[in-house]
Each structure stands twice: as structure tokens, then as C-alpha cells.
Image 1 (cartoon, rainbow, N blue to C red):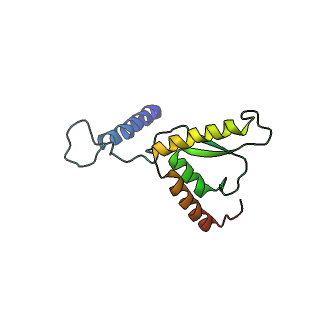
Image 2: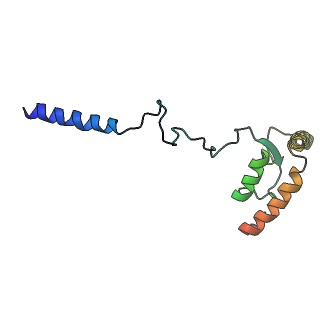
Image 3: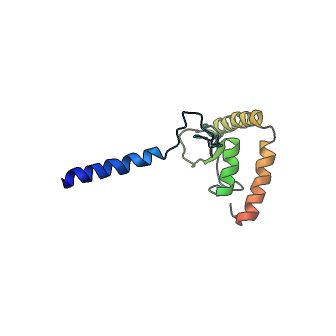
Length: 132
């Protein structure tokens, strides 16, 4: 008997909450949308970052979060090459690769270098990162 009353009570409580729900499939008079058109936080599509190979981190602000946002905006990153790197044995291959990357960046935004240098100066002032 207690089982039956308990089961009946649980069914009654469970079904009463479904009566209070708004049926969005029917045209209701409320002006609430089921799925509002919100702008996504990351509206940029993921793209592969282009790599600019450098010998040292002088004037690059490598690892600075402010500068990382700037380089991500333009779609490139700096990669520090160790002296014994096997990918680019000669400096000519590194220079040619960087020339191709900078050309691609120019076609994305012709003023990328000017803007990134300006933002680097601002990032240095904001974070106090004058070491390089």
C-alpha cells in the first residue's frame, strides 16, 4: 500500500512540472525565443598559424599574452630556431620561408607589420616588458 502511494505521489509530482512548461512548438503569445540568436564568443574560424622563424627573441615579446593576441589576430606566430635546427640548415631557406609568410600576411592585411609594431610598443608599455 505504501509503495503504491509513494509511486502515485512520484508520478503526480513528475507530471505536474511538465504542465507548467511552455510549448514552443505551438505559437504562443510569449515573446521568448527558445534559441535566441546570440553572437558566439569565438566567431573567428580556426585557422593554421603561419610561422615566422627567428634566431633570437630580441624585440619580439615572445610569450607576452598581449602580443600573442596581436599575432593571433593576423594569423602568424614567431618560432625561435635553435642554432642546430635541422629544418633550415642554411639562412637562405629561412629567409625564403619568412619572405613567403610575410607576403601572405601582406595579402591578408597590407599594414600588418605597421600595426603589429605599434601594438608591440603598446604591449611593452602596458606590461613593462622591455627585456627581449
